[in-house]
Image (cartoon, rainbow, N blue to C red; front, side, top):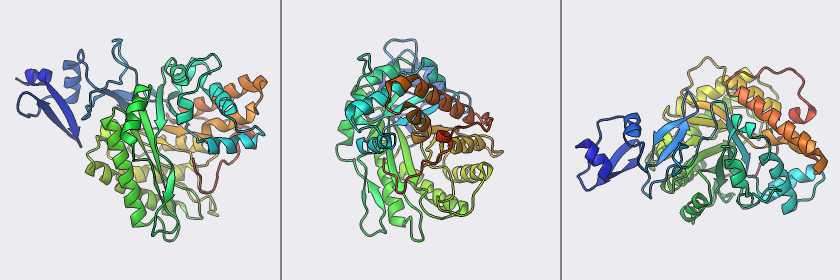
Length: 425
């Protein structure tokens, strides 16, 4: 009876519940998700590769209200590939806007043209395929998704050919939140479902949405926390309806002179609100990833904290707020230098506290700074820039396992602070 119901029905996730639709009356299966995976392995089902403690992205079944979409790599040619970061891999955030990319190019004396932006991203995307051992996903900006490599191959195809998953930034930036002390919400919900559907057709398997909060005497306000939590939850729900894995990014800016304890307190309040909102919007947590800030003191704080102190505060905040059902957490770098971000990530993965999630990285500046410095807009520097990028990716891969052993030989580009006040992507 149960098998017949499986074959003639269509399951839908609502929150953590599995509801079955079909010709028969609704019922609940008595078997586990793993058994369901085995039972339906030859059928066209929506399978989401998500992180686990043992590997990084194990197989979990996920159906949305829309037509089912499968994004797990298998031997069947009818099934597409998805493994956002293998055992020690993370995500390259290459989703900088035109304006943000222009500021980075300006620092090395390169004009902000579409061709120069394309050339730098081609440099990153065209590295040796072995990069897939360190980077399992790349977040694209809209412009980049439709650009091509020097060889005329669309960038998404270049990435997929390496076994890396393609993602897309779908938010439209921040806007002021009336009645607050300069706080913001994030725009882009209008038309999001249609955009997600199109991005899925164009080869994307996951999406990212960034909300921003700040710390001051009066911030973040209850209004800002609630507004941004609900925006993130609505975005995540829409993504899942369209077959995209949502990366939820509630970033708390490092602006200010607050200490580590203040940042930990605020991080806990924000994450608690985010997961309450995700539950209220029936988001399937096993089919999401979290991209939070590490718990660090404000950039202007006179006291400096060790990577071990940062790690303990970060993991403690996560343990108090993030459900174990969330498969993976990919930290943003938040203006830290490349080396500082790697050291903190390494310490996080060495903490003696229990960590039920895979803890990895989703770095932009902290993966690209050395490569950009080595490139300088010169074609002759391409190989040196690629080597710098691969070296930093390898370091972060080791840090994701708590196995990075710094030699003290980091170059100036790797140790230079990447902090920008009120950072806008």
